[in-house]
Length: 280
Image 1 (cartoon, one colour):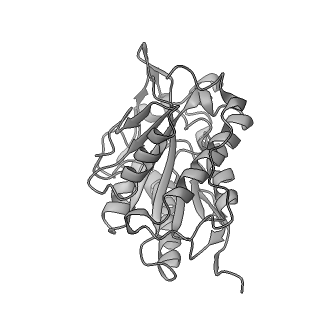
Image 2 (cartoon, rainbow, N blue to C red; image 1 turned 30 degrees about the vertical axis):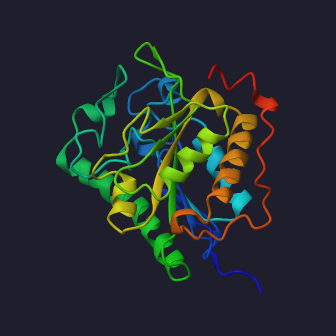
């Protein structure tokens, strides 16, 4: 008998990838695209700035799309640049709409009126979060506590400092997902795994706080170093590797994810990207 499914759907602010409603896992990608609505042009920035990490999480979208397909689980991805408005911030966060980001002044955000701020919240921020809520509600009709797994990426160098981690696991008070993820990635022996590095997961109002903490759902955020997922080969590799780890931990800590019964959970062959993983 075929599994009940969450259907694919899209709108200007989000894209939902379909998957099993009873899988017990939902993927989220807050900074999937560097797209800006036509009325905003480039927010006054040169095109080169829109290709940087300040506009989106490089490589994260490709990883999420592949991971969703591998595990047949639903995913919600944003369809607008974080420079327009950042869906991984609370409404009252001063970095919700950035006027200055990593040295780049954003002309289109410098003289932001209250009306324009509310317009961006209403047209882009809120519909994205409402889409996540709808997917969660559909999933909870078939699974009591679906896991929320958010995928982001981080720059390999920040303010002159090399970031040595290949992967980071961010979490706050609930370690039902983060604990097994950290333990499993560490046990594989070839990665430097960040525990709330290179960022802290303790950010009130962010996406995981809003949809995970506030709803009592198990959740974690994975950060992948951008030099490892800039191309399709890296995105495929990390999607496969994360899929394998999620299958390994699917029944730990009461997670009860119904994923990967037929997915091979042995280690992904690491030699294919050994030169790109960098020093441990």
